[in-house]
Picture 1 (tube, rainbow, N blue to C red):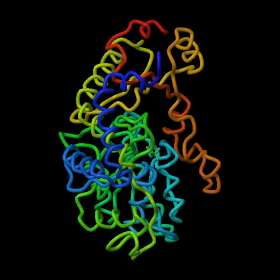
Picture 2: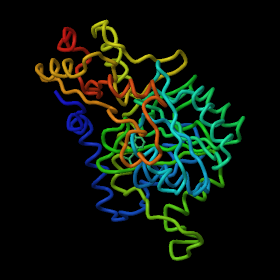
Picture 3: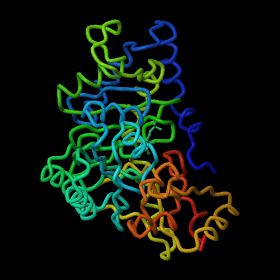
Picture 4: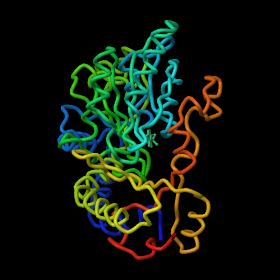
Length: 365
Ligand SMILES: *Cc1c(COP(=O)(O)O)cnc(C)c1O
């Protein structure tokens, strides 16, 4: 059994994907070809936003968003400590200071109460300027946007939704990628919507932000890439990856249903001693990961491994414990929930081509 089975997915979509790739090879516009713009239209339509702008990966999508919001030295950006490194990395790379926030014990997403505590702490210290929040749709579940959007408004902070894992998730029918001022996703192969290499996108309803992203992703272009009006980067999605994504996006709603079926099966059949993912009412997850809380994690992993079931740990190290952020001086006591999660989380295989039910998991305990 595979943790994620990209080969099975390719076999299922092979004819369509091969045809799409061949068309790109035939027309030869490998950079910014017509498939890129076709994909951007379809992505905007799926997410329900005015603009979808593709780029080279999900980390660049975050970096481009911080460039658009003009975030740099002296600024603070709040983000969860329990996330993938890229969320916090881009803040530091922009020269700003990441301030970490603890997790909600039920959803594992950023805790709105602790976010407000951290904002007030920075305001009282008066050393740095709070500028923005990056919230993460962890494991596919959108963060608590009703609360976080209200906090962003109250303190006049910009809000970036990191939907690298959340693409396909929803709150009350509103799709991940449509929250905040600007949102980002990743098409890394293992994400809910992945391509066959690196890829990413930025989503926004703001026309000015969209124009800036389009400029920044091509060397700060003005009229064209030889007219440079600002310092940008080179971050484009390859036409071949866009062609692959067009076929994968068409299949995505069906795959999302299958992921939900697997999650439902897991939640019904796994031992009651495991704490299973909790999805608040009105929310739906894209199930980037199916992540349990277990006591004695190593023993449980070994039991699954003995049955040929791979498991993963997302994430065993919070941002505040990463060597690269040790200078910020945080300890586990600052983030009690996230520190507990890092000790107990365990992710099970999750992909649409798993058998809808399998008895292998049932008696691991
Ligand atoms: C994967 C991921 C990213 C980065 O995406 P890449 O395409 O790998 O650069 C950013 N944030 C989160 C939460 C992720 O899971």
